Amino acid sequence: MKTLHKILLMTTLLLCFEHAALANSGVAKAIILKGSVVAVNPTTNEQIALKKGSWVDEGFVVKTENKSFVKFLFIDKSQMNLGPKSEMAISKFPKKEAGIITLMKGSLRSKVTKNYLDNKDKDKSKLFIKTKTAAMGVRGTDFMVTYNPANENTALVTFSGAVAMAQLNDVVRNIQVTQNALEKVVSSDTAVIVT
Image (cartoon, rainbow, N blue to C red; front, top):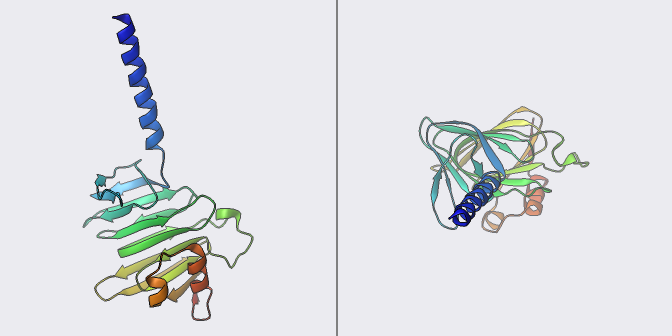
């Protein structure tokens, strides 16, 4: 009986440690949350209700309801607020390269740290925000992006720093977007720097 008790205790402890390890995995942590916010697993379509302290993995889609919002702290120390009735995908967020966030609808505001990636090239983007119609390359700044899927309008307001913005053409819009492809778009002659 004592052996069975020890086995059950060890199993319980191992499961607790495994759950704690999984709870801290992900690329973004919800540090402030109000209302109803869910993360959708792209492979299973399972909706997970988020709460303060929840971690979200790369590839997940985050959705907020009316009168709801969430503030994330990303692994690069950048912060991002997703506003009410909004939807974004954390498309890519590797540890050593610029992340790609896709805003499908609504608004997001972000503060990207100036030393993110300790980027020697000041003209290289530290984060990419993409909508269906535009791409933005962030170079260490405080900004807000809104996207309306009804009229496919993307708007950008920069509070400090600089954001390079360019229209996405059909070729770039319909391919698997990489950091290099987005950097070419936001560094092209048609891009504008919004300060």
